[in-house]
Length: 149
Image 1 (cartoon, rainbow, N blue to C red):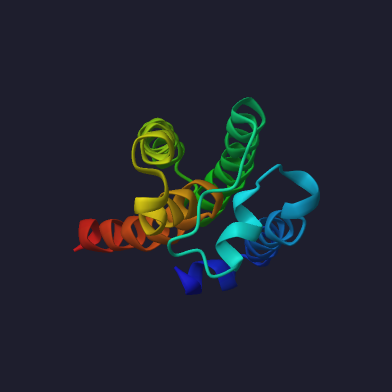
Image 2 (image 1 turned 135 degrees about the vertical axis):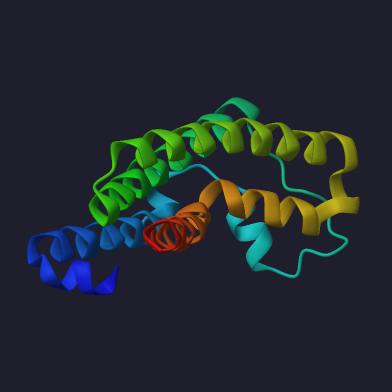
């Protein structure tokens, strides 16, 4: 995949630009998104009560951040592989993962609260960070490589 990217300078620039966009989402997270858990998880949170939050604002903020990361990630997948089928498949996975993660997030918050802060930390991390693209690109590259043999 690296040879393909280097052979196509425009694609390489697009790929780098999209990665920079993901970084910008992270850099401006405090200005773009409502998330009282940012400060909470940067502190020593074990055993502390969860911060207060507005459910509607937090839900919209998590959705918006996940959507931004998803759009940029799908663009990365398209630039890397130029296959609309992979993008559609990835979009479906992103949708399924979002629904499962959001339900899990609120079950942990309302069902377990302070007793499950570590679980909440990791579920939230999957919602706000572009972790799936880090998993998908190598997996799709491997699948492409195996299919050629």
